Length: 195
Ligand code: G4P
Image (tube, rainbow, N blue to C red; front, top):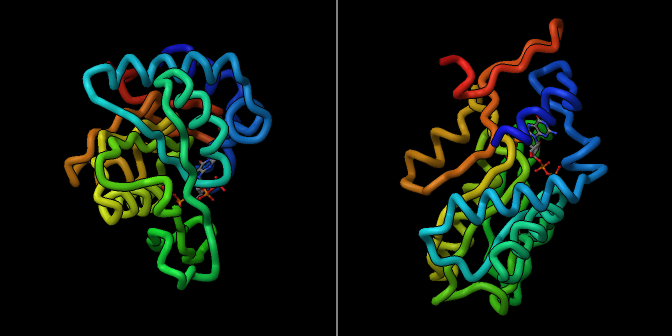
């Protein structure tokens, strides 16, 4: 998505450790006009699949998922991160390992909001190692719902997440795939740019 790539080049900041900071428009301050365009783009890319629910994970996926959900005219559900497992059995639960933060947490979704008959599109802002997306896919599987695909705003193509998710047969659409970034020169190469 050209508009997004231009915005990343203009306002993204490359930090140490291959971290791309985009908090002026994506995951702290949020540019809702850009979000509208992102919502339309996902709608276009997933035009051939049926979706009746968007599923994301807190925290920074929620904003973008809400706007994507509007363009599909469906509700959005977010998985909550929790340290304590709910033992009442009224939630689906899965484990997510965060390399970046060096911890494991449980994610939960109430059984009230996900189940058999649902056709679910996963949405998140970043795809790095793919653990969050794997966790969400596991919740969908546990619920008996159908996984329609996954929409990611920025995929870090040099980390394992994209390959992991695609190798599981999940239809993944990433609007910008960063192949490499250079902290010193500020250069960002996107997949598709090389040709
Ligand atoms: P994974 O979910 O793909 O396995 O990613 P990983 O554990 O490596 O990343 C942990 C968190 O850092 C995730 O957010 C992910 O979205 C975010 N992240 C990874 N790489 C970058 C990056 O280059 N730039 C930015 N801005 N974020 C990155 P989180 O902690 O799970 O959630 P949230 O509460 O921040 O939404």
